[in-house]
Length: 408
Image (cartoon, rainbow, N blue to C red; front, side, top):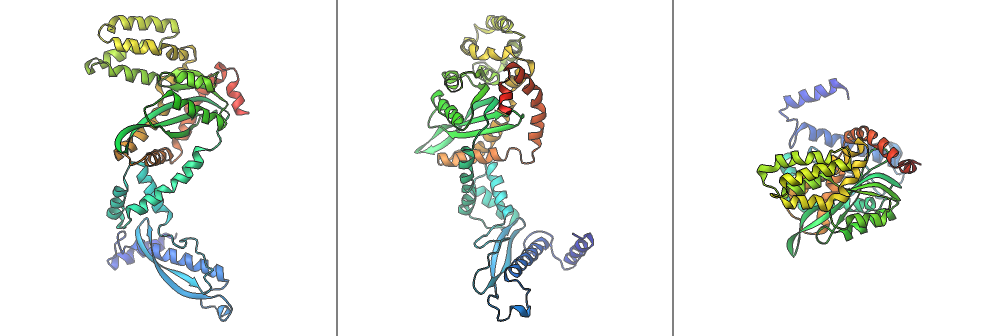
């Protein structure tokens, strides 16, 4: 747009006492003019002649006045006039028939919903910032549209091979007769190209269970996942067997972060730092034998005071030690699990803002919106690919070509 023209418009607005933003402001007037000019262009293309052109006189279909319509835009509600034709065949595209919101508003509603705002809070925000009166029902209708996309996303075909799949569950409060915790299961994979891919979301009907995870893994296999090199999960009883029933060659690795987090549940807060310092030599040991020696030292020092921590690590030992046999790059991703933790943090933030949900569908919608809003600029995707290259090379060597098979 010509800078000089814009400058003249702003100066004229100031001289007339017109505000730039807000109701009746310059931006609303410009939006009205631009939309109406586009609509005039559309009906001219539809009819094949310009306004007031003699070619349209007694030539069949012609213009038939206008109708008023208010649309909600990024700059607030704007009243526009929509041209009509005599036989009613004109179908405007920039503002379709029965459309009351331009795309930017719907994107705004979905973005606010992804951050955990309720329909009432979104309605109040739009009224306060944009002066727009948008009902809770309208906002709910906008967000409900994503469920169609979610069904397609949830059933999409998947890659043949994934180097790592992280399995975790997040508890949400659902009001079904009474408010109770229900798990939302999340499966996040790293692709052979080093990008992050959330494979699906599932709502459970009770506490987190290995039986449900078996159903999830079976569904993933039915959607095309033939091989998973390593599955990282918490220490849920029966989960390793469930995973290996679906993918017999998969190395099941207990998440070190989960082990540490669960250890602190049994300890007094004043001992957190000391216990963390004592456990670090265990999961950073160069070999399994060295890890066993370091763990015996930990048990001797803390076993009498916190026997539950010793029992926790002893029970999880078989699924804890596999990563000790791998390259340092593989160890790093298993120990940090930033892949799933960053996703869980975003989901928990959205869920916590809502408090509880009226039903399972509402909870899934909130989590899905939060997941879809994870990396809007693509910066995270590019950073991820760079970080994962060394680990993927290590996986290719450690698993003897199984990763390469996924690239073919």
